[in-house]
Image (tube, rainbow, N blue to C red; front, side):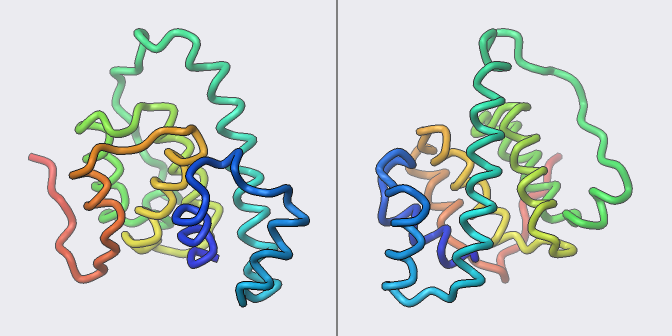
Length: 158
């Protein structure tokens, strides 16, 4: 599924440039992706799109950003893992994502059903979330997000 997400990110500059789901599924099949992966990716993207639309209504007051502390329940800690949580906190502290975007990333990461989620897959999720909102990280952050190096040491917050 993640190969398809990366392909879409690289192929379509904006989500509205993607063809309708039926045509997109056919294009992905023509490129050589498996039907099960295509179905999983399109379902995942549909849920992301729904969450993105719902979050736009909540972003009506951008100056009132959350300054609260996010506590993770034990299931989230187990599913996400400390590396993913640390990376999410780093992105939020660097102002790459806001609190609403953080929640979308967490929900989409939990939807993957991989425990713990790899840092490489989490980076793809963050890129896809930003892509779905028509936002692009700055060049340095883009390089960090797009380099999917599983061996890299996760960032630590001090």
